[in-house]
Image 1 (tube, rainbow, N blue to C red):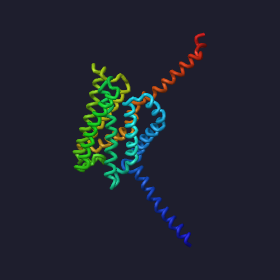
Image 2: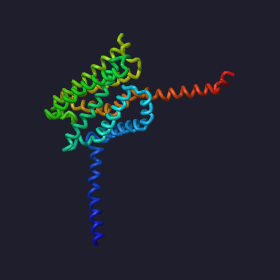
Image 3: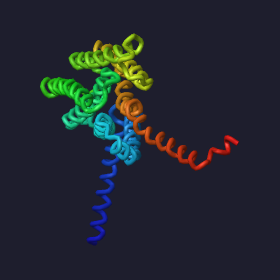
Amino acid sequence: MVQQSVLAIATQGSESSSPVLAGRFSNWVFECHGFWHNAVLITASFLFVLYLALQAKQSFHKLSHDRSYIIISYYVTLWVVSVLNLAWCSFQSWECSSGKELAWNLLSLFTTSGMLFLEVSLLAFLLQGNSASGLEALTRTFGISGIIVGFDILLKAVYLFGFGIPLFIDSSDSTHHVKWNLWVVHKLLLTAVYGVILFMYHSRWIERLPARPAFYKYVTVMFILNAIALFACGITGNGAAFAFWFYRVTVVCYHAFYLPLLYITFLADFFQEEDLHLDNVYYSEMKDAGFFEADWD
């Protein structure tokens, strides 16, 4: 009798917990911007962190031999920001859950600030031109980036916790004009900086920039993305609800693909140089062993 009672209680508990778990999973995947929005964010951010993890052993080996201060600092910062971004993409349901506002605002603030730090650091590196190398360049680059991002964090914290403006709670509601005005200024500054660098690439000041096509492609992509976001923020703030869709597309693209783009632009060649060096070593050893003498006969 006792066993039957225990079994009945356990069965009741499992049956009652199943709808709760199913509801939580449904809210996590389908609620707050929809399934495809969340699926793209989670999948892209997870795959990039997985790629970093699979390449970690080879990357650490390369970093330990070259000891480039700038590359080591960027790689460590990229790891931290990538994990934060994965958490931000995975907990999208917090944005639409009551009682999670503080946690969502803090996670969004740290994640966006980390990504902005990487973005501003790369811009500072670009504007320093071909002379950007060594510990002095690292100190100057990260110093400038730290000041700019620190001011940005302070300003957003005042808006969030001082005035109660929902900067990271996105909706097509255009009543929060101060919020959309802040995003317009934010995107305008970034668009202007990328526009200046693009202008430099097509002017006589091109020699001041690093001679790498990947940097030019990166600047072009970021200029277009920020220009679209600037237009969307401005139109949404003026009451055009359809423009909010464009804004959300830019947010998804930024959080899903910016970190891989930065890795390809700035770090990928550094970690691939080891493979090219090994290919040259193997070729030299085979040549010394006489493997290519038959080609001359």
